[in-house]
Image: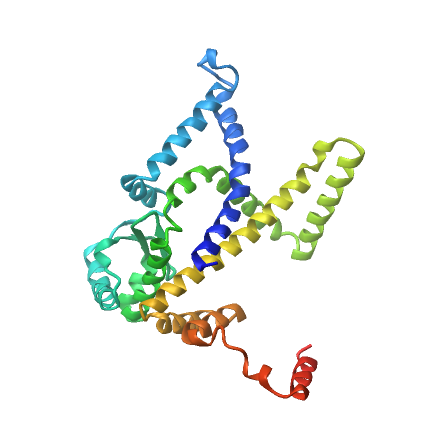
Length: 310
C-alpha cells in the first residue's frame, strides 16, 4: 500500500467520527438559533434547522471551488495577499523551488498572521505562509532553502490530492470545531484550579458514573461516556492522519532533493524521538528497508542486545 493510500485511509478515519457528530450538531445549532421562531410554518418545527443544514451544504459546495478556496483561506486562516516587502523576502525562496523542480507560479501564495514558522496547504493550489516565516527570512534567521523545504513539503501533500476537499470539510466540520474549542476553553479554565491528575480522575469518575447510570437508570446516561470515547477516538485519528500526511510530504521532498534541508530544520526545532527517527529517514532513505547491522551478528550478541534492551 502506498503512502498516499495510507494517508487517505487515515484521513477517512479522522473525518468519520466528526462528520457523524456534526450532522446532529448542525440540527441542534440550527434549531437553537432559529427553530424557536419558525417563520416557515409549512416546514414544521425543524424547518429552519433543515434550511440551515441545506445552506451549510451549499456553502461547502461553494468552498470547493477556486474562488471559495481563496475566500475560505481569508476567513478561516485570515490569509492575505503578500505585501511588497513580503514578496521581496519570498523571491529567493521561489528561485530555490524552481531549481528543485517545484514551480511556484502554479501556486497561490498567501500570508497568514501566525507568528510561528509555519506553512499550510489548502485545497488545490493555495499555500498559506505564516508571517513568522516571512519575518524570519527578512531577518536572516531562516535561509531560503529552509523556507523552500517547508513549502515543498506542503506542496507534495497538496499535489497528492489529500487537501483537495479541505475547504468543504472545514465548512461541514465547523460545529465540531466549535464544540471542541469550547471544551478546550473549559479545560483550560478548570486546569487553573485543579491539577492534571485530579482532572483525569474526574474524567474517569464521570465515565464510570455514566456507565453505572446507563445500566441502572436510563440508557441515555451513557451519553457522557460516549462523548469521551468520541473525543479520544478523534484525537487518535487526527494523530494518525498527521503522521500519514507527513510521510507523503517527506516522500515529495526526497524526490526533489530537499529532504536533507528539511531534516536539519526538524532536528533544530524538535527533540522528541519520533522527529529524530523521521530526520534519519529523510537523510538516509536507502537504509529504511535494510536489516540492522546488529541482526546479522552471532547469536550471543543478539541475546545480549535483547537482554540489555528490556
